[in-house]
Length: 109
Image (cartoon, rainbow, N blue to C red; front, side, top):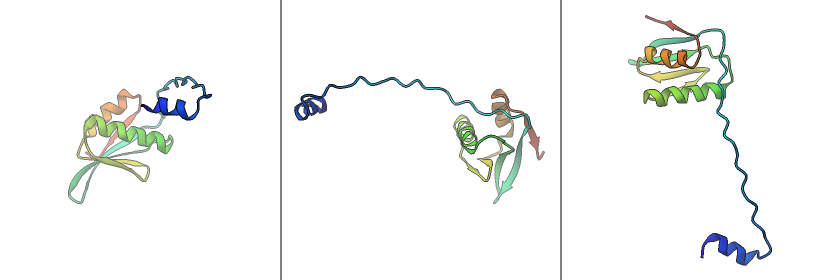
């Protein structure tokens, strides 16, 4: 006896309502006019790439951070209005951001 049969036994007068399909709308990121800054730093002896200067909402910036981390298959975090990526991936990050329509400025070598 599956769940639907059990529900029919408990509530014989109930008519199930067909579920409505919800259309998935892709999330659009805010593309700004000012360039984002992509810089290289060493923190505790480890190479890190830092992306700063996004003017949109924090949620959009977190979505962008997640996309970059999954495309590069690296670790990273979103902290203090900046994305911190483990390793020196400035060139790859800049191409990903340019493909999305962002202007990117390389800082630090």
